[in-house]
Image (cartoon, rainbow, N blue to C red; front, side, top):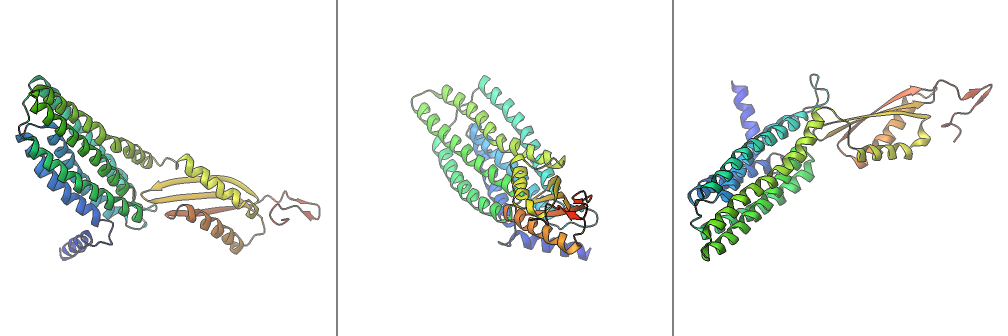
Length: 325
């Protein structure tokens, strides 16, 4: 039991350590709680489905932050005997869970939007809603900036996902503010029903914006879980590295790639001169590894060397493509 409490205390300390990848997600969670706790009841009391929807999106982001913190806590662990490729898949699972949760809540908001169209209730205080929306926008812009810095620093998929969520939240909040301004103007000229319809349609538009990063990163996470090879752009970059070092080996056989969290696992099969020593093979591997690491710092590179079948020897002469250069 003592070990458990010590582990909890150690983990909690990392939450408030500015050098930890979890620090910004914790701030993100706190900020989302504030926006959700204020936005959902405010939108409900003032009869603004757009503001209420924005609050629900923030509430989902609270769950996202919890999933993100949990996933990062696991994924930053080093590979071990049980998980040779590390724990990066936790991030993929968390992203998929987040995307599914937001999709479910979106269904609820859509139903509520169409119900409000049949039985409109008018927004009462546009000034209050506008003030809350402006404060939320300032908080979101600040949080997105910090999350982008954090994502670039640690290069974890979950951090990039959260940065994109905050970016979507910014556009969502801009949509809410635009809706409030238009709704306030229509309300001033006595067009309350039209203003309410715009509010309901805005709520639907906000969901579309919020779902975009979920579908984008959800697809990437699903591909990672299926161990799909890296993207075509990365594959071409790796072939470029092979071309740069073509004088170091006899023949290129194949390349195998996979991703686990931030780690890119890259394996190359090359044919080397039959009489190369282990040290000579290692020098070639190290040279190619350095070229790959320049392009992809989080890559884990392995080279598998196969000896040539000696078909370059004809009589007493050796026509090895490596040694003859």
